[in-house]
Image (cartoon, rainbow, N blue to C red; front, side):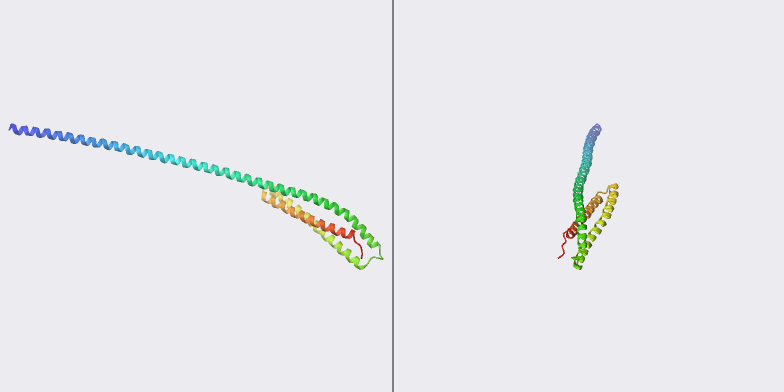
Length: 212
């Protein structure tokens, strides 16, 4: 009987030790799980931090790119304005030079007109030498003179129209229309110069006319 009781006590002690050992293993396993869980959480935090950092860098890069683009556009606009300003100045300088040419040609026309009138009076006065052929030639030269004068008179209205349009364009800050208007005035000036030269040619023909 004592032997059986001793065996039961020994069995209980062994079972108790096994239970304690099993509990220790479980505790150790749980601790490891906690440690591993903590490591995983730290990794997730680092990944999140890296993502946020990358996002900030991307935003910063976008802002820098937008700023660079804005500067480039500003510089491009300035270059265009400078080029347009230089082009307008060149056109205005040419217009000024043309006005001086027209002024000189107009003065020449006035002087030649006086000589032509004197010469026509001389031709008409010499009735003995006056022939139908002479009359016809004079008529042709006078017609050429008259046509050139009419064409010049027509250009004055065009210049006024262009100036009015440019006034509106200037008010609206439309540089392209101003440039076109100035170029149109240049074209009119060229026409006036051509017609003045035609008048001078006709007047010279009349002044130096000699009946054959």
